[in-house]
Length: 341
Image (tube, rainbow, N blue to C red; front, side):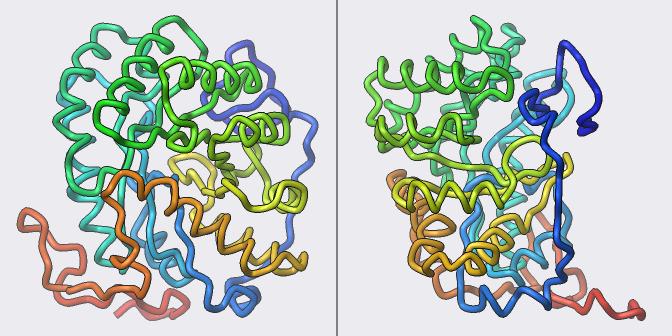
């Protein structure tokens, strides 16, 4: 999927034709070697798919200073076969995953929507639209998302428009997925339609931006989100350059970590890189924490006091009779130990 030398007329959801000439570089650093540079920072990841991640990830994220996340509803990697799988998925976002996250001291929110790729199955999309109101008003749902365009088909536009109206009715922020192919046109089209439907751009987060789209998104008053995702979206060296050029106003960073090659620690690592480049702590805090809170708090579902000062997991807590920290385990353990007792 991420072989940059491959060519295809139908690249997958996570491939970007414009990155074929990019030569990845990296610096190997262990957590112990960069943690001091970000000591005291708190991070908010406003786009991460924890349903695809492990408890190890939760432990590492908490250790690195991530105190809260937003999990947008997304494409799970293969076509769903019926409405029941959507119901189970949405239920896990507002239920089990929130509980699992809390066990590691991380506050979990979500956005609910019909993903653009899945909008192309019209029969199923119609059924999903009927059940969305059952989920978008639940506790911890901070927006409609991620919605927008993938292949930029007529059906994607139809269900994007319907969900914008749903967001207006529910008074919820919108989280837009911008396409990986023909991104500039798709981003402009997404914003134009949102404005056509009368949405206030300060209630809309345009995600997966790059150098080609950022200026227009900011100029039109939208939030510009950037996904630090190796090979296909945005590297953090490029991200640092964007912050240096555009500042911190209405810019936020996320990991979008999922079932692909991705990094749930993308935000702490980018923050460490910003520190090394001399960017002020105030600017770093805005793009890695404050701006995301500002954007999604409009939902009325996000209270910073729930995570600002951290919280501890109760190992005895259960969700539908199931526990994560079975037998009173502690949410953190020494992963470097040879012995597994």
